[in-house]
Length: 253
Image 1 (spheres, rainbow, N blue to C red):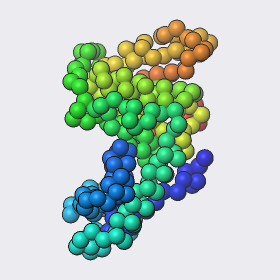
Image 2 (image 1 turned 30 degrees about the vertical axis):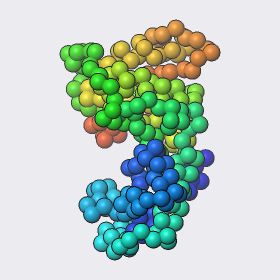
Image 3 (image 1 turned 45 degrees about the vertical axis):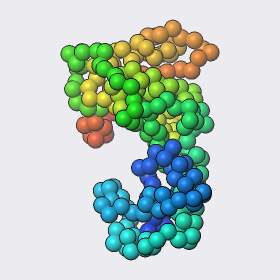
């Protein structure tokens, strides 16, 4: 599947874009629009008076025009437009999200998931349990913010399992895995953090490649289990400079 194969709805004039809304929140909005038992949906679908900066950069976006298109009171036509748009976005997200990921209802409390064209994003919420660093900052070789990288040739769900495990035990709060159109031969997990203190620990915990690989086995290799290939830590500044190791390029080709 190519990204061109995915039909991603554009918000009708006067309807707020929902790109930053999490998958559970989007489904709840659809439910409110379908039931129409209250006017609660009305405030949720209107463009905000002060939109997020990323929204204002959308092509042909005119905030004054968007606000002018909102009726003074809820109307059936406005509700129907919003419902069709929200249902279209849900369908588009479902079509690109890997089937091996957990359902929204199965994700633990405190972990929110949102799907875009290219990435499935994970963030922690206020309801996440308290977590503390279990490795000192002195172990870090770089204190620049960046991401730990993991690859697998198997189902993307094994990478989501790592996210859940680490989000629940350590103060990670942001991660992403690719959608179906954005996946290369291997799926990649980007687990974001402020430094690389967990580099060796994460490799020891998860790496389980065949012995003929060049990286040496950190965990016993079991051919019956999904393969996980940790690839260290990459700083945000290196990403912005488009710096990639030869090994990383090979995994991404």
